[in-house]
Image (cartoon, rainbow, N blue to C red; front, side, top):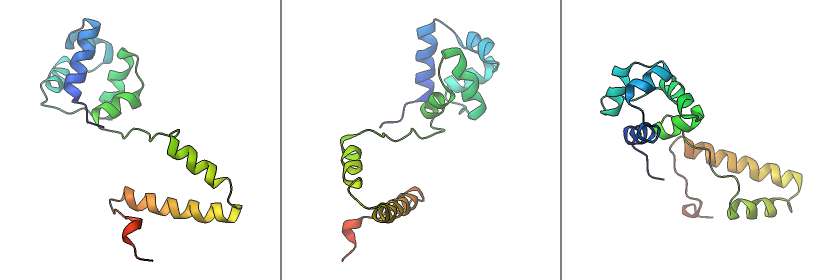
Length: 124
């Protein structure tokens, strides 16, 4: 997914409401100066500003944090591949499920740390 430019997104939100930075400042509690610097890409927002910006637009804090790059979006949980994995997993015994779940959790933890493991690269 391509990263959205937060300043562009914020300006589009303001335009859609017919607001200027001053109106968002009034509604969010942030200063007009701060919001203007964000719109000029001179400042990045933080978690508190994301929370302040969310409410006037009727968005969740998580939605604004994701757009601002402060939070990763939740991965999809209902895809054809996940449904296929769930179906296959159901045929395993409890012990087999525990084993493969542990393997998957270890793999994901390594990926999150930035260590890329390609199972196909490991000779058997």
